[in-house]
Image 1: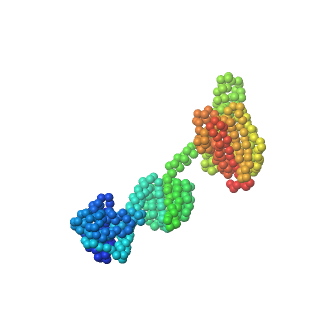
Image 2: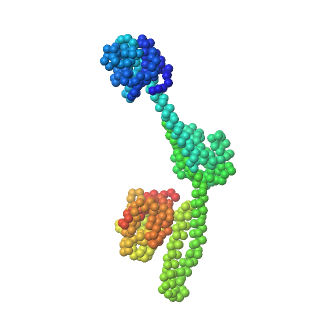
Image 3: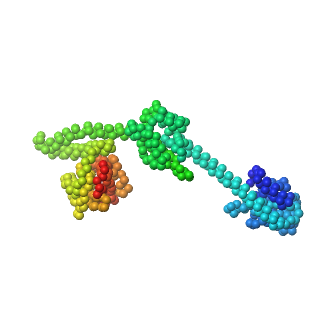
Length: 512
């Protein structure tokens, strides 16, 4: 309501007045208080109160309403629009109805003398009213489209602002593989907005390499090109060499964006991990250096303590023997930590050697139990290989599997209650063999299980320190078993003991 006049509606009222031979034709819209004329022929007024409006009665019905003589109609005989100017005697109004069934107003014709529309004139009113409804629907759709476009524009502006302010590089290409979005961070890292140059000139400003920083990527190997071809990119590391900038290592994630036409555009998000990578390398180098440098003096200290404990320098008082015992135990713990650090460093660097042989698993279990038995006796815990014990052959590195078993068994012993038994079970399944080490100790809360196989993870720090441990053993076990194409896990509840298991594949010799 209260909108500007429009030629399409004025044409309809002009045709209504002409074809029906009426002095007045109106398109009226009705609200709670008034009727307002969107288009009018033969009337000067812009609106009238609703309580005087003939149209307020017409919109209460679904068909054409005719008032042949308003002076004879009790509803209108005393209406000022009848008794005074414009002296209405005849009225015919057809409700304007939306597709949802709402009646907005009418197309009406008025005369100052009594009239009656014949059938042909009534059909003309119906057709003209449908034209009004169609025009209103067109405008409503247009307004909704404009509103949607405004909302989309606002969302695009917000998205553009967010993309340009996040501390990550974002690259987007369209269905034709053409670069369409390159946010501010990506421009900064590459040294320019590459959209301003043809692709053949990009290499003069920057180059992309694999994570080794040496092997250059071909154009079709870049993460965005692969995402455009439909590939999902997950945590892929590349190296960016931009002119006048230090090499930058980027972690890429992205994939195809499917459009309504079915064609693929694509997006890749890049995070700068250069500092994180350098820090990790420094940490790894530091741990490796410290571990190697500590091993020689620690071996010397351990040997000297063993000689003193054996009485090489003569008998020692009980107090000195106790101090040597403490030194001996802590030397063992330090040696375990160094070995774990070295193992982890080799695993991370991919330098650990594996010697795989096919062998029955029972003999390995028995060997591990025999080796750990003296350690378990220190905690007054017994070990048992449960029967029946399946004995399939597995293709493993014996030394590394014994290392996993030693870790499982030593953990079970030191976290068990005195006089309890740690059981080892072995069960064959169609595709794998599962080994379980079951203790009757303090148990582990289920919400802590995810932390167990992570590096340097110790759940109850005070209890772990009391019982000993480096926080690396289970993480190393996981890595070793996975190198043997297996998997690890745990079942436990607090106060109900724990079952640590691993599975190894059967029947086929994996490729290593």
